Amino acid sequence: MDDLETLKARRAAVILAHNYQPDEVQDAADYVGDSFELSLLASRTEAAVIVFCGVHFMAEAAALLSPEKVVLLPDLKAGCPLADGATPSGVRSLRIAHPGAAVVAYVNSSAAVKAESDVCVTSANAVRVVSALPQDEIIFVPDTNLGLHIADRTGKRVITTGGYCPVHQAVTVEDVKRARHNTPGALVMVHPEVPPGVAAEADLVLGTGGMVRQARERPEEEFVVGTEAGLLYRLRRENPGKFFHLLSPALWCPDMKHTTLDKIAAALRDLSPRVEVPHEVAGPARRALERMLELAGDGR
Image 1 (cartoon, helix red, strand yellow):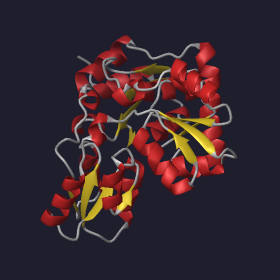
Image 2 (cartoon, helix red, strand yellow):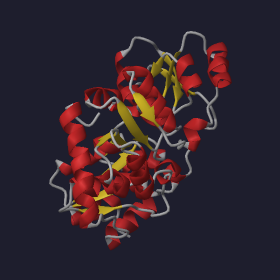
Image 3 (tube, helix red, strand yellow):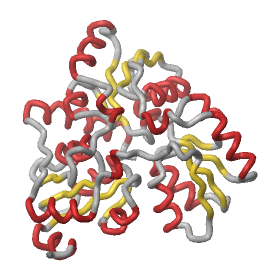
């Protein structure tokens, strides 16, 4: 059987792995990072084939930014309950109910939902982008906790829909208090998808890219990490002199663990499963992503 490097060369492929992917998948990837950061990187390479080791909405975003390339998702069962919490019809109903509001879609959403939106945001640039919008009323889908985080930091009226990431939603204030007791002096970093009470107890509220940067740049040597467990592998690998602890054992996403090295190899051999976005959806969805880049200046 051909190894991954041989298959990758044969297909002129690039392998992308999200920060939450299994350790061995991160090791096999050309790039490891945030979902949208990876899609941007792939669009700027000469690769003809993108293997996205993540979940379905991430592969869709890569297809939106690289319409001329083949985008593969090694396992189509890798979905996202958060992304599934928003639908195009639901967004259209919210527009009717709030005709003056801007519709903002988290990148953790389907291409069809992005197509119904005015602009997209990442967890890192959400406050920056929403602050730049002229509207004072914002419809935000699908993550309620990130929406509340945006409202708190922008002063705008943010209408949310009750969606959440079940992994981040499972973290509690007691988890933070326990971590502070067990690791006194450690810096507590949490993702903005956690409940507001948890975010209020943390030292920093950051997306995964921000956590990577803070772990590298800050003087602290010990960190408590409040996001999916897969990120710890990267943090420990890139910061060998520092110590990282998972905030809660609940921070484990089964969808992010569907990818295996055998599935990556099979995807490269067969050029399947492919992720494609219909033309009528791709155009408006791409415009929502492009407006985010205009307002934020980058994908972070």
